[in-house]
Image (cartoon, rainbow, N blue to C red; front, top):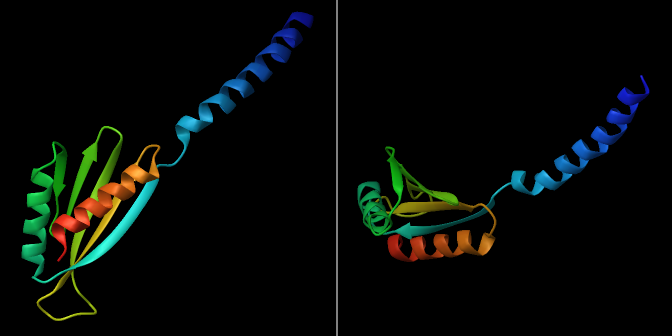
Length: 119
């Protein structure tokens, strides 16, 4: 009986220590976002998005109004909507990027994508 209590006394702190040390790997990703105006319709916005994504070496999923790409350490989603605040021939590009550990990487990706897609 005393051996069981000794093992529990040793194992419990070890498990707690392991749990504490593994928490950083469970941290949420760093996420950046941005938007821009495209002086063209949604089809043109998506075409510009596809051209930009074509310069990247990533796996991409294509939806009706969005493109989602996956890097080894992050992902992005680019959406094209009719611009609710502008003219009927304008669209709005919205970009989200996530990186496992570094906000600056996600934010830089968003800024580059906006510069390539928006007017």
